[in-house]
Amino acid sequence: MSLIIAVDGPAASGKGTIAARLATAYGLPHLDTGLLYRAVGLKVLQDGGSLDDEAAATAAARGLEPAGLSDDPRLTTGEAGEAASRVAGFAGVRAALLDLQQAFAAQTGGAVLDGRDIGTVIAPGAPAKLFVTATPQVRARRRWKQLTARGIDIAFEDMLADIQRRDERDAGRGSAPMVQAQDAVLLDTTDMGIEAAFDAARRIVEAARAKHGL
Ligand code: C5P
Image 1: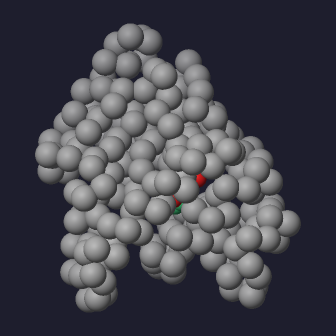
Image 2: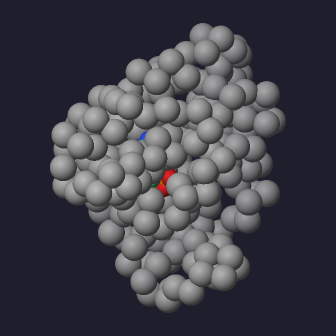
Image 3: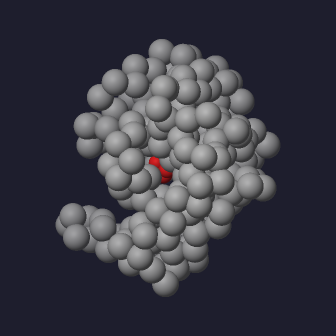
């Protein structure tokens, strides 16, 4: 067994930062799977299509070129996140993105993946699983601070509504809904800064390594 670390959780829970830091700490490759869905949503929009069109979204997912996605600033926008959560509900899109995520997880030596369904669908056998969360208010505050620091003008209430809408859509969909895997460890970062959250995440991974002899 290799060290696959599955990090799931809702938007702005801290899972992306935690996953990136775990990858550095353990010298593992990291895949932010949200970027795949963001790229699919954005491609549909750029082609002038509708986010309700499953066939168009599935075709975009099949044609996705994953290299270089983490360097594309257009994928970090709220518009891309919203488009991602719309197309992520389509079974065809999820099926088209399955192989590449599972191949990434299966690399010799292990990997870190973060998303919504890593511990449940992509890598259900992963020895280390974290479900990172925080209250919607705290997550909205974090996202709002990031955006206003970048000079983007958005009301906190709109940010909160956006986070809540995304949570509902991600948790309520029929296809691979966001849910904590039974064997995932819950990490609630509501009252934690990033250092404390990372330390807690590392302890969870260390316990998993000890348990599985990794
Ligand atoms: O994590 P991020 O905010 O980049 O994800 C954007 C959207 O992509 C999520 O709201 C979710 O709908 C979708 N997603 C998913 N499964 C994943 C990763 C992301 O459905 N593994």
